[in-house]
Image 1 (cartoon, rainbow, N blue to C red):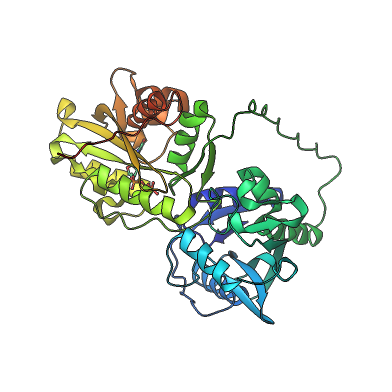
Image 2 (cartoon, rainbow, N blue to C red; image 1 turned 90 degrees about the vertical axis):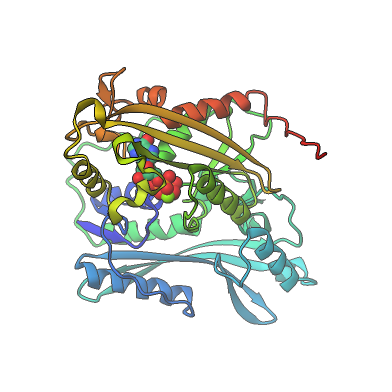
Length: 421
Ligand SMILES: O=c1nc[nH]c2c1ncn2[C@H]1C[C@H](O)[C@@H](COP(=O)(O)OP(=O)(O)OP(=O)(O)O)O1
Ligand SMILES: [Mg+2]
């Protein structure tokens, strides 16, 4: 069965797909199937999830899932909800300080809070089911750990005896209300379905990778991209640094509109915005394809080339734009700029480029974006015909990552001090 998840975040869609696999469901996200979802600002989290799921199911004709997460606490006998959208404050630090101020003077025994996710499953027929996950905790009286994500440094999880900010992404997901809501949904569907025949071979549990050797408090970094293909490559490339990586799945917010005129501008825009949102360093990647015969098009517009909304359509559009250009004239380069932004405003930037030719028809199944059209003469393959490792060897992103790795070989590089005359 196909089910529409009302998220545009492919990382979230992917994780949901993994968790719903036992049901045999195939998750598609709004990135693949666009349907209008109403904005519902003044509703409770429950209503918001219900309204969005119902709208998506109706518009798409297939079942739809929507979720909403909030912190819920009692202030002066009244229930209050706090979310990413709380107040006009647009940084995590501001929201945290505001929440602390709101609760000032409340003794610890009155600071009990619940982290709640409501997950609604709607059928095109109009039938609705709701699943709720909860995590009990306390809102601390001060931020003990600056390096958390969002409300994380303030939310002390009772069962784990630590704050969300002190958890790895895996630990955090394990106690998250989101994960619990998904599990309830899976259990409920399984209970209402006939069991599999016992003669079916049991699924082999996936081999657990060796835990990394203990490191002296690794740097926590948010990889601020909503592109699952990029995330995979960045995670692989950064592995040698032993950083603790978070994704927009751990803290889903929308990256700002990319209106810069260079890759550097856009990468800075995304990284600076992201670090402000979460209070830990953030790494953004802005990249794109520059085709010589098209005077550098699509360049910074690669992700919205021709106004097209899928990789396949953009590839077809590019082929059409190049239909009269032959052979060597189809030279192009990929550019990637990585910007690592720290919460104090400091920035580092790394750039990588890869040269190749645009083929006249796609080749290969791997990678993402323009990979099936980008042929690397040196390798005799397109990016889409390469393994992750091989692509990293030739790719713009691989090169930018190696520059970053080199600079961070002995920890964060010293900051340049510019003496103004
Ligand atoms: O290795 C690559 N192989 C194939 N295509 C690639 C590659 N690297 C960038 N590209 C394409 C994808 C996208 O059409 C555009 C980047 O746009 P860009 O805004 O940087 O990324 P995005 O919007 O997909 O994700 P996000 O901004 O959340 O990081 O260039
Ligand atoms: Mg983008």
